[in-house]
Length: 185
Image (cartoon, rainbow, N blue to C red; front, side, top):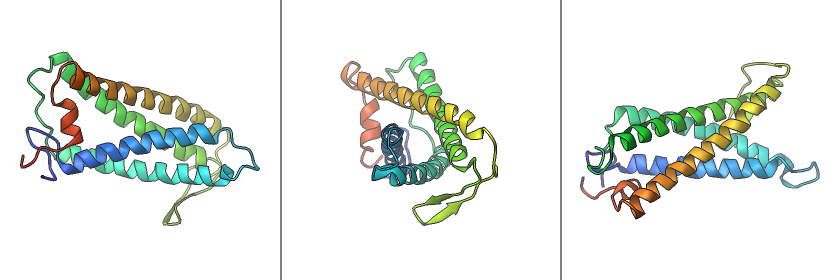
């Protein structure tokens, strides 16, 4: 199996990054959804936000790397049974997913640093605040973060349903190409 993409399918790097990002997005969304109802006396009150912020910062870096890899590597050719609409819609959805990930990441960072605090990422490194104390910023970007994460998860689910549709109804290799890189491509 090859690291890079070919005309037939995705390489190991893109397959790994695709699923790593997918797991991180749904994990962050689930953790975020869970932690908003935590009370001060809950054991996860401090830990959940720290994990959420740390994984979010790492996800931002991974998506930057993935985007760079995607721009440097070729994309597999569309399958012959894909209509022009499906090809354009898939490209648009992928770019919108990237945009939503960046909006969610930046807004999450701004929520956490609006009071001048930095973000400690798993005790590996610290990300400082770029805003200092910014009055009302937390509220404004909180709304952006909320809606961008819901849009990201909704579009991700639609993306997954489209892949399942291709697999079950169209019986093509769309889903297989991102699950398993073709051997020796």
